[in-house]
Length: 191
Image (cartoon, rainbow, N blue to C red; front, side, top):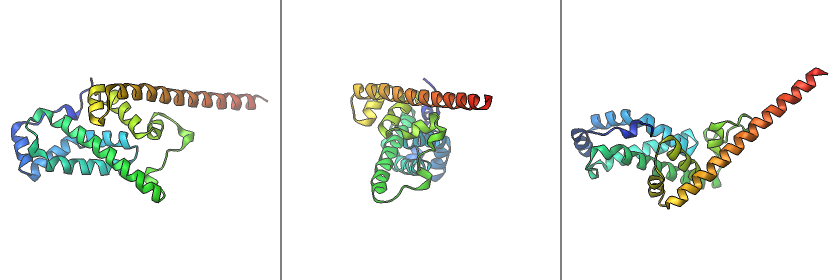
């Protein structure tokens, strides 16, 4: 399992200061975890604006509820869970808004001509993207993902398997399309 910022514990004093809403401690904790939170939120939402909304709302919620946490070693997992939930909430809210209004340019779908892993991840259903990212990039177990999503372990395993297959097929199709285009250009230049 890969280590990341979410794996860093907070000491008891830091946790106590967070519980008392110490602004300086909040800033230190924010700086320590924001990159990991941003990366996670971006991967889950596929949209920079939505990711920033999720990160902002997640830290606000974490700082308000810090007094409920008793163990500093669990802070990273707890924060990750909050960020995942906020990312899902933001995505749901934006989904409702997009039904009423055209999407923002910062959240538009990537150009299909430049399909790569990043753009394929952006095209995934949010639940599929969440399972794939949390398992393969964040190193979470199916049990943790299922608990986070309020689903079963078999749901997580099935989503992961199907999502990996979809991404692999899409990337393979894109590679074949590029090779075919290259071959056609080569043949066209020979005449």
